[in-house]
Image (cartoon, rainbow, N blue to C red; front, side, top):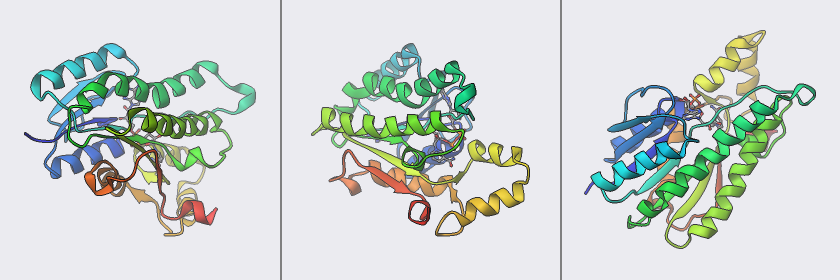
Length: 239
Ligand SMILES: NC(=O)c1ccc[n+]([C@@H]2O[C@H](COP(=O)([O-])OP(=O)(O)OC[C@H]3O[C@@H](n4cnc5c(N)ncnc54)[C@H](O)[C@@H]3O)[C@@H](O)[C@H]2O)c1
């Protein structure tokens, strides 16, 4: 029986790369995203990760096709620029829903299937934004701090059977970041500035994060649970 992975945000930059990495490693990949699939998935569910009915459909499909799930990778997320004096509470709520509750719901509905795997694990997408402050991005940073706390609590709650970890990337080149770059006053300077904030003097690629996620989910990291692993090209040590 093939190993089975669920990847949320599978139509986006890091989700697409992660789905591909798991396929290359021989997994059957089930992608979930609100946008149409960008490829790299054996099965794809289009919908909002905050919608419990979507997860019931995903759960029923996996149950009848495979009877187990080996790894759940929660990548989908979003970001708004929002300064505090004009904070739009609907945006704040939506960001918490997508970045935090979306994970809660996927884990809630897939936990029983994960327990049927020999070596189940969950990897949640955090960010270095969970550690640092960022003007105009308080909402986003707060949600990523919440992802770290969620990861630690659920690692305890689901131990010893299911390992739960989070990954905290630095600046990774994806549609998510390139959009912001292109909207800036001077994209060339902005990019240079961002690159120089990393000790490695460059931004990361979605493929580099996908490989780290794969390692974190695989038995190669079998003694790790409740950890938030920073993969940031040396951003944190430099700033
Ligand atoms: N790019 C970076 O530098 C960076 C760094 C650290 C963390 N992150 C995090 O990585 C994750 C993925 O980012 P990316 O850079 O690949 O961005 P991306 O925008 O390319 O991909 C995000 C994907 O999530 C999907 N999504 C958003 N809301 C959804 C919802 N409610 N239901 C279903 N799907 C939804 C989008 O459709 C998109 O395909 C996010 O959680 C982001 O916070 C990104």
